[in-house]
Amino acid sequence: MNSHADRFSGIDAPQSCFAPTCTISERQSGDVSMVAVYGPLTAQRAVREFGNRVRELLDHGVRKIAVDLRGVAEIDSCGLGALAAAYNRTAAAGGTIGIFAPQPRVRRLLERLCLDSVLGVFDDEEQALGAFRSADPQNADGKYTVSWRWM
Image (cartoon, rainbow, N blue to C red; front, side):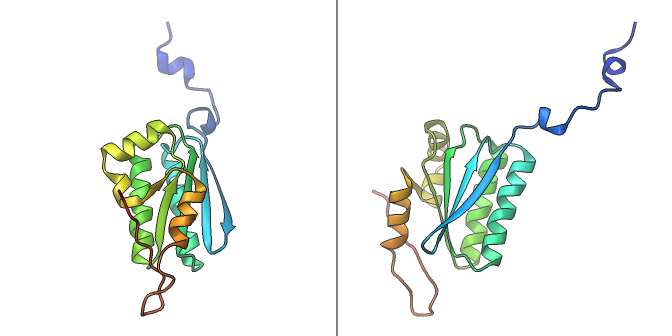
């Protein structure tokens, strides 16, 4: 009788059969780059793609990033780490990042970990863009700043 490993040793299945699919798109709304994530933000590949996209935006001079999480039903510690890293990278570049429209499960997780107070989590796109618009346009050294207000 063949072992379990012997029965499956010759099968070449595509990686996508085993890894969740995540799509990342980007568009502009004034001077804010809107990054939309669709699918679970869990797999290393998805997390790496998200981090790379934020890095590319910062490398091209973008300093205001709003992340649309309405398409993310699942997030794990790697995904949360990617959001925190994006925040740190953006802040180090003199920019600001905000998150909007997280699904209830994702929002609860962000709240439990107190990441909502660090990242700036908004109910919808309009609220997120309003936070960028209501910020002081420029400080004394010419860099944009945004101060989130929590109630």
